[in-house]
Image 1 (cartoon, helix red, strand yellow):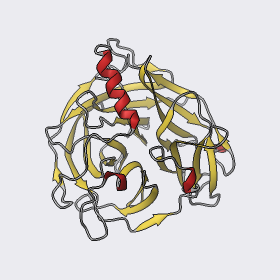
Image 2 (cartoon, one colour):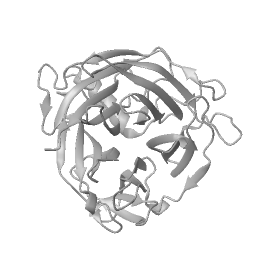
Image 3 (tube, one colour):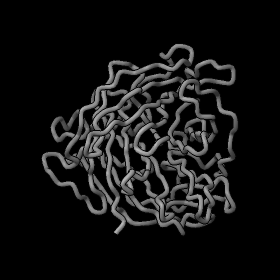
Length: 342
């Protein structure tokens, strides 16, 4: 598996597959777009740094995690998620064209201990028929607000809105102008980040999208504010060989980005980068410092999804999920951290 140090040859094979954009499982086994209850087994992860008891990693304090498995073939390929209730009920999208829902359960110490009520539903077209062509439903980014899910799709590049109904997700009711010229979006490097800016900030809760690796002539990553008072294209400075896989705004207005890289020498890495909120502006090149970087010595995999939320005791939480690409060599992980601001 990717996050273990043994089996380097298998690791490189798995990582090459996950970064190539080749689908290892097609959408289409759920019956007629119906909601499918999924049995989930979740093994708690107590250590982030493998074999060490460290809890503090810069500004991040590791709380705990889960390694999730299921006998159901549709489970996996988890690309993005958002909590509907803080640290509890969640909604997500898989890049094989599925919605997923569930609840994180916790022990007495507030650590994640399992997943309950997990279910999946295949995305449907305007007639209610399941969409079996992956290139049409390669869902990668997700934002949630006021009962509306906004999803970013790559390959067939678009951003669309759906009414949230965990018992029966319908076709999108509204396509959105994603502002970035379509010719600038690379086929498998489209919008991985879809997130709402802070309601009281400069963008007044407007939607912000960031591509994975669609580069301008200067080598910066295309992004845009697609609604709100300052609508327009900006870019994010590319820092090293990392690509962007998700993001969410922090309470102070900065944008926290999840990034991933792969090389034959070092395998898969993940990184969290804080983008200064004032640099998220039309025509600007947004940038900011790296807060956390982890390689295969840590409990990581193909980290694709991120959410930021506040715990009932006031702690600022950052949760991450991985996409296993339906590969036996990869894992579906859920990781949780406290982000200390001082």
